[in-house]
Image (cartoon, rainbow, N blue to C red; front, side, top):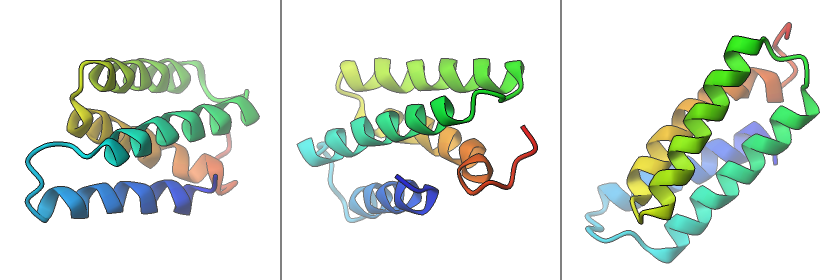
Length: 97
């Protein structure tokens, strides 16, 4: 999945929350699962990420996954917003590693 696709999923989630959804939709949870999978795919294709960046990404992804496991889909998406922001240059080939 391209970074634009990841961002689009995130924007759909934010739009849904802004529309007044008080309980997370199962589709929102699935969207966060897809974001987790996409970020891992990007990270695996770019093994030369700086160690500190890779460690931070993995911890943030684990926090997102933990939130998702407890049903806190909103926190999952917030954590994935951070991951996506860091990985967007990598996914677009703009990072020097």
